[in-house]
Image (tube, rainbow, N blue to C red; front, side, top):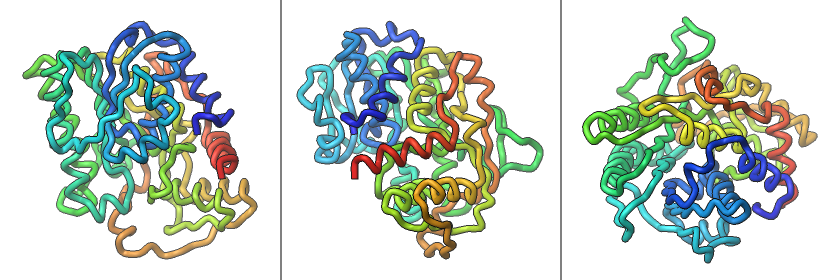
Length: 350
């Protein structure tokens, strides 16, 4: 991936944004979920800055699968400014270092099959894992802790607003299997506020929309990820609902530029939506964009029971980007050119 021209353009674009990068100069940054869709692009961006712009930040990338990580980060596996650590965040993390300046907690189950087949792991990563990382940040005198939360904390739109701002709270039936993900993300946010108050830890929270990009895992079962896999495999796009769900989406590099904006410019204790109104779309229309690009058609297929159990019950979840834009953030891609860029990169790698 790192040698792909379009992907490199995305990395370079984010790395050259007008941000207070000096805050990361000669600092140490720990990232959980580093091998994931967003985490891997973030690591690539920070390593680009470290190598090409002499930022010299030390990146500690946390993940569970070392072989997978070597495939992703092989170009700088032996770089002194990069270190991969195989670790399950549900157990306390021990590093033989006195200080970690920034902790970015991104590790979580993030797709429907994982929610339904590993509901315990989904909840514990967002609560026990978050508590372990917050405690780690306190013990290592961290400058700031960033918790990567989700649009799912808003629940179902009550029909009273078009866009969710950071104060909105919709309906979630907590007594269901599927509630494990949004409720544990809510609890993770509450833990951050508790550590801010009780331990005087500087925290910020980013709430990602449904994210996509060429770093998508082939095992990801979110609808957009399945559509992308259909598209690059020259298959019909399989829609497993009526497709009237109306959601916000964010391209990989825009999500990371948002995370970095929140990390470097956000106010202590605040939460920020990372959303792009130009990428809000109904699921059926998203499927059609990919079908048109790949020269195939959209077909309907009933989901199996495992998939169905993991699907979000929200029918309309559009997030306001007003607050993060006040920090100077702006997205680069709308849904159409973001999807086309994703498919172009992935097809070139096949």
